[in-house]
Image (cartoon, rainbow, N blue to C red; front, side, top):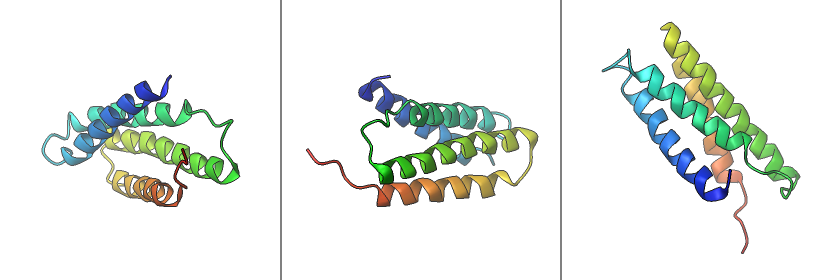
Length: 109
């Protein structure tokens, strides 16, 4: 998957993830489906990102993002089963992604 397609899929998936989490109280039947599609898209984007040109620190942070994506998939499974622990898993995933967003060094051109 090229970089532009990955960015588009990631942005759409992030919107679906946000919509699924936000609509859980209003539409508890449809929200897990939106969340699951968004979680799968984000995880696929993380898994298809090339890592051969990354240094050790970036690879470690990339593994955190992969774990956060898998945790989102687990969160969607908890949403489908009607358990309330999905909020804890989503919070952990969001904190991991927030951490990597601030700690990842900027690309130099």
